[in-house]
Amino acid sequence: MDRMPTGIENLDKKIGGGYPKGKGILVTGAPGAGKTIFGLHFLNKSCMDGNKCIMVATEETPEDLLGQAAMLGLGLESFIEKGLLQIKPVVELRTRGIARDAQLLEDYSDEEIDIIEETGLDRHFKLDRADFNIEEIDIIDLVRLIPEGTDVAVIDNLGVLAFGLSAKEFRDKFDTLNRLLAKQKTSTLYIMDEAAYEMTHKIADYSTYGAVKLFVKENPYTGNNERFLSIPKMRSTKITLDVSIFDITPAGIKLKGSKSKLVEL
Image (cartoon, rainbow, N blue to C red):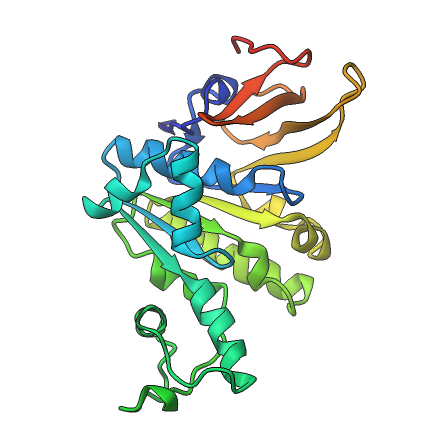
């Protein structure tokens, strides 16, 4: 099976050369575990390799994401300028919609207009922006933000769109999204926060081709809180179920061994 390099030192060796190409991989974890940074690494490496990439941002602004990437030495802005990367700010649609409901805003931003039109949410489009009448963006609507021909997609955070859905509704919608993106051969990283993952009874694991779990806890060998990674599932890949330590450094994520030393995997 063809692979897509993760962009993270030693992780590719651990999973047979990278994420399985054209498949959906789930990344879950607690706040601060490094989920978004895993996505930024994947985008950076994929763009470096000349792939067409899209990031769907449901809870952070493009400016914040680009700033975070720059602090890690990942120059995503240059890929946007070259047309290799687009960031779709779904967060704009979510937060500004709430502000309008509270009568704190009246107008729609240009970013909102773009997303509304791309996803087909402008069901009652009128000339005056303040008269848009849209439905809330849905998990399946994300397919329209990731068109055919997209090599790599990172959706961060899928969990934002899971709240209010029953477990069955989430499973059906997520299965549909995942299958449609796999059909168009888009390698997709689904980032999901721990709260939504638990709330939906962890069923997202069953839909994706692979799963990466990130967590923070005390290392019994050092007595310090550290970040850990486990890979319970990666189809078509020979994996071990050991837990690896990793650090978030100024140069990005560094995968390490159980005794805080870089290892050759």
